[in-house]
Length: 317
Image (cartoon, rainbow, N blue to C red; front, side):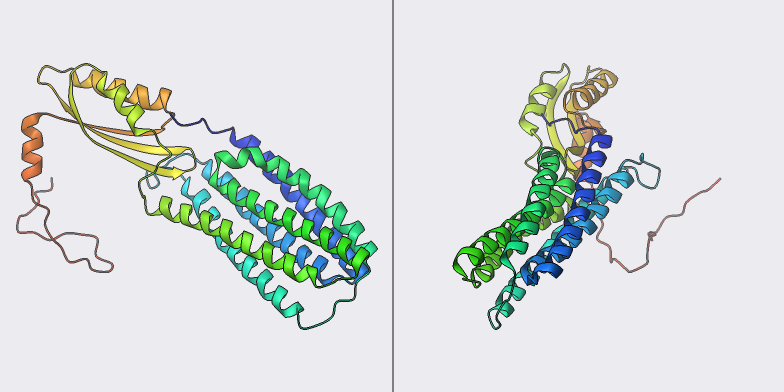
């Protein structure tokens, strides 16, 4: 059984607060980089501003996805959340590559920073980042879109933490090269997590089979209904995190009350599993055999061709 999604207004509130905190962190770290001369702090501020952009994308996607289905868009706009998650995941990959590149470039030149100033501003940014991460930690489990935003904040948190550690080491040992190694570790971590987001987004968009939906539990409910001979097929499409569409093909007995079966399956899926989009196909043994005997005509797919050609005429009145 799927978990109920939290109210969208709550997701919007938490995401908006986290985005505002990210703007505050960017301003603090940008000022701190100018006063301390820390390139690492400046790079982390640049990382933060991409996070602000990611928050705007995720917020826009949440608002768009709340629109109701239409004739043209029968499943609503839930896939906008997935597209936002995919874009954010690709953005994370770009950030990771940039961090790794900058880390390698810094090995070639000396770094002159005021460690105390660098430490003060990075600690302030780190504390605010903790609050931002805490806001999204819970809701990120219920939305792929917010999961990508949360990973942005988490990468910011680790980035700021590396700056804090680097400032401490520089302050007490004078070993400035440690900042390079911490940046490389951070870049590898972001790269790994971002690939997971991109992979999951693509799986949803190409409608791959999902493990998030408990098909076995659904089958138990359906087979317990009267008049059903067998469940021939269940197709589950994941529209976004926690939102599914389900198509069920049922083989029924001759004396079965078909309307009752359709009603009961809709009730089970909508009230027990929280599935908003349900389609039920009822078949008899004779009809099933006839359907299986129908051959699918092979056609040449042409760009821009949306019609069909055949040898019989349509009588339009």
